[in-house]
Image (cartoon, rainbow, N blue to C red; front, side, top):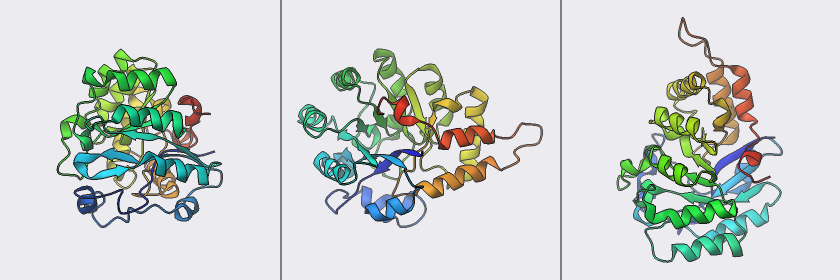
Length: 280
């Protein structure tokens, strides 16, 4: 079974405003249709794919998906989807949204966007958020790595900020998105040292040299088992992400160095991520 740990719900114009929408073309060097349609997503996945769906909240960047919209989307496709709530802790009332998304809407994890929202995720001021998630077994999906949004401070996207969080909350499961690109080495250092910290490989296959280099680092550091499969739909698809990973695995590599381990790439594609995140 394929588990996509990183897919979005952008369902209407109210979800995505500027500057996120107006600058999204920078993501892949061209316009991206951000509207998510279930039929298109399902057609781009192998049968039986299970998917973690996130909305996102970052007022600074113009992104705001109500958790109730995510819950309705998941309820309509319950056999395939698991929903996460989202929190922007720079905004008043976030504590109530956290409890409502979990206790009333039944969402099973938390999406955080520190760079897009403009906050330092290591700040102890947010420990109530992390303590709540740790206590209730809600895994975090945290955006790490670069962005196309000019208003989003890059310093808050560095994977190392989550090191302090993992030290203070050792039972909190976290997934660092996009392998922290282009700070992959920092991300790999993070996932190697913390038992419950993982990274997804979403939205990387269309930068093939970068993905090859990132996986080569993961292989050298012995952290294949900490990498989870993800797509970042609608920026790309599950099938294209699988094909991209396999194509990278077929590259001979640099003379004098061993190639990427093809069997590890297959394990990555079929990783039992729901078990690892406590969501089975």
